[in-house]
Image (cartoon, rainbow, N blue to C red; front, side, top):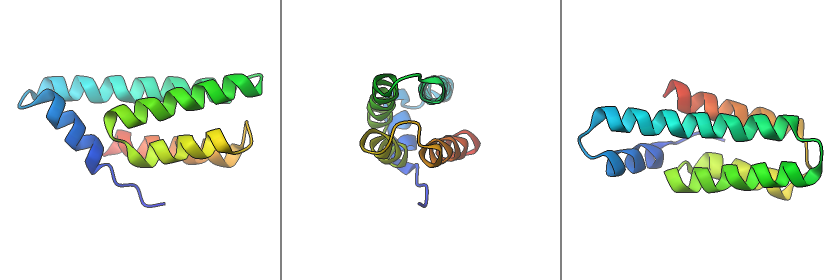
Length: 100
């Protein structure tokens, strides 16, 4: 899956306007929240916790326009809980956002 985070950048710019500091703070908040949800998915002890964290990640991604991350969260919701392939894809997608 090719990662395209133009929508994320557009959402951040729309929210922050010309305020570069605010855009940076919003990006940091997004990344920290996404990291927290992925961490909760990794540590989930039951299917319900997995689903809950994946749904929160999907909502977060939708709010910020991170379409690829949203689709991966959707894959986690509809797939098998604790799927290591999905977890790896989520981590890789977030790494792309962090280094972008």
